[in-house]
Image (tube, rainbow, N blue to C red):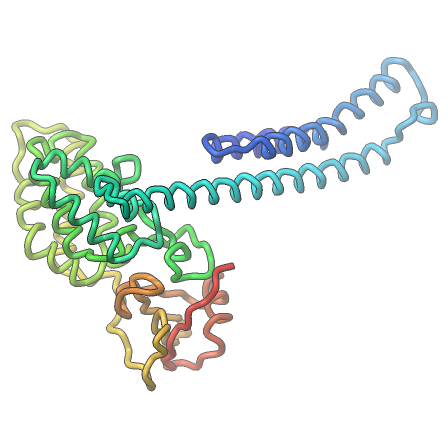
Length: 363
């Protein structure tokens, strides 16, 4: 039974690994996974052979070369070795995929700097180290497109599967040491006021905007990530609130004849999100940035304050090197794992204490 469980578990792990690395798996990764599978099958094969010798051929346990204890030991050793090989394979594939991604980004950046302005927005959408200059080139590219459909096609680079706004993990832009799947920051880290306004403005300019079920689902997903919690600055949301949201709300109120119930449900959900943005665009941005007792260090990436309830508040820049304190806000309760990680960076803090957040090297 243990041998069967081992094989089943390994096959499941290999299936998940194959789904994760279907485009970037390397030959060495295949070899390590194959060896892991061979080791996982070995205890099952030995068990079947011993069982066949004992139960079908009538051999006593003494005449069977492999005892039950040895079978159990082989199973444990093979399970451990298979696990190590799986981990090694994932590391090899992850390292190779990261290297390929860096090389692709470097190639695109080189082409853009050589005059390929049509690739300018690829840099912003795929490189967490994109600079304000990269964003300026992207803006120039989009503003050069006079056709609304061409502009909208350019903005698709910033949508995941053409559905919702892409995000970086805070670690990728230098604002965290740890990987937390619950946190995400939109990939546009510079010139957000222009991007957010122009993105929705271009969407509104499409003749069939918000008519199909797919487009309404896309709108709902994008609005869900158009908040301070996803790293948009208050200035960007204020510009959206005053210039775009009223027109967007009016467009949603306009129904092309009878509408299906599922479409109406999405329209209602989007209207509620727009109403929230109109009333409280600052929601998710935390309290105002506290004053530091001393001038912050030039390389400080944020401001930290320990709350009266031992909650850690962090007001960070847009990236580790650009932006203002408070562009990004994090809040961690004492019982969260991220809390302890941040305290190793900040050191002991008493309640009410305010301190600058120093830059750190990523692990």
